[in-house]
Image 1 (tube, rainbow, N blue to C red):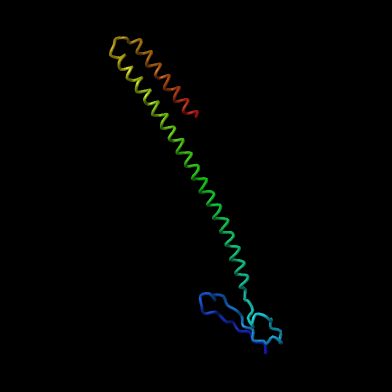
Image 2: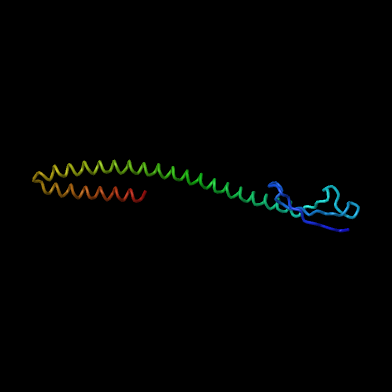
Length: 134
């Protein structure tokens, strides 16, 4: 008698089904698995392994990308700190120059004042040009 019925496990560890083969081992039933034949369990396991490996590859790629982003952020912060120091020193230099110009403007030396203003403007553009090329 060739009867095959579907049996589903009841516990959480038996979420996959097996096909119960009611044939006796002498009637062509596979020996060694106690009358149960796997109904794709190994296929699901192989697919699960494949998907796990794919997920592991993606996670490692995201991890390396996040490490690279962190390194880049540290470098950018360092560069911004250096630029802040450069701008502070330039601001101090310009402040001192403007103080000297105020002192000169109180006097009656208009020709010297014009030369100082032109020189200050020239220095400002040179500094601006140097910073822009960086």
